[in-house]
Length: 138
Image (tube, rainbow, N blue to C red):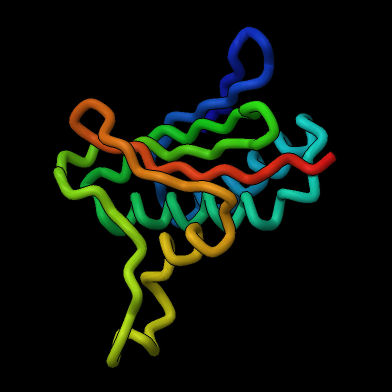
C-alpha cells in the first residue's frame, strides 16, 4: 500500500487489497492527509468512515481489491472507495430489526449516513464507488 498524490498534491489515491491489518494503516494515511490539508479535526470521523467502507469491501466482495481516493472538493473533503464487485445492486443503509438489532456488525452505511455531511453510491465500470464527504473546518 503506497499512497499516490496527483500533481497538485491535493488528491490522494491508494490501490490496495483489504486485509484486517490494512485498516490500521489506512487510518494513519487518512489522519496524515487531513493534517496535510489542515483539517485534523475531521480525523476521527473520517477514519471511522473509511474503515467502515473498507470493512464492507472485505466482507462483501471477492478478492477485497479496491481503490481509496481522498480529495478536498470546495468546502469539503471527499473520501471514496471504489471496488470492482460486479454485483449490480448498489448498497444503502439498512435499519436492523428483530435479532439483527442486537448484532455488533453490519452498521457501516448506517454509520456513514449518520456521520457524513453527504454520501452516495455510484456505478463505476463493472463495480461501484461508495463515497462520503465531510465539511471542511475553517
